[in-house]
Image (cartoon, rainbow, N blue to C red; front, top):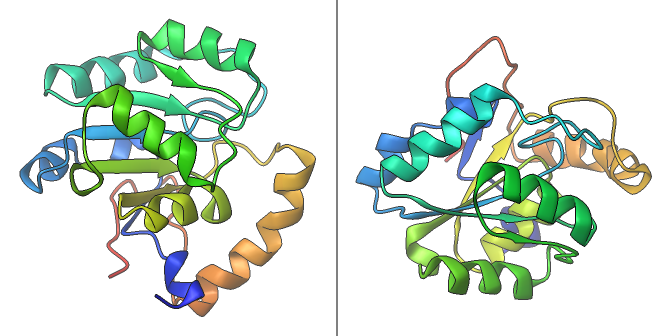
Length: 179
C-alpha cells in the first residue's frame, strides 16, 4: 500500500453525530474505537455534552462495542471515558498498532468488524488503516490543539488535497465517501 493511501479515510463526516451507525452495522461493523480530543470533546475540555452521552448510548443500544483510545494522559482518559460509561486507553501512542490491538481485545472485535473514528490523519487514520480497520475522519471540534497537532495540521491539509479530499463542514451534516 502506498504511503499516501495509508492516510486515506474510508469515510469523512463533519462530526461523530453524522456517522450512519445503521449503515456501519449493515456493513458488519460491530466495534468503534473513538479518539477523545477534538473528536468526542473539545481539546482540553472536560465538558461532555448530553448529545454525546445520547450518541454513545444509541450506539450501545444498537449493539456496538465502544472504546476510547487517546494519546492523552491516563487521568483525563479515565475521567472522560468513565463519564461515557465505556473503557478507555490512555497514552495510546497512535499511530502505533498496540493501542488499536488492545482496543480490539477489550471490545472482542476483529479488524474487519471495527471502525476507528478520529480527527487526525497521522494518528487515527494511519493507525487504523495499518490494521485494516474502517477509518472515519471527523472535522476537529475546535481549532485549539496540542502544540504538535497544530504543527501537523498543515501537512494534513496537503495530504487531503493530494488524495483529492476535502473535509466536510459541520453545516453539511452528511458523510462523504472518499473511495
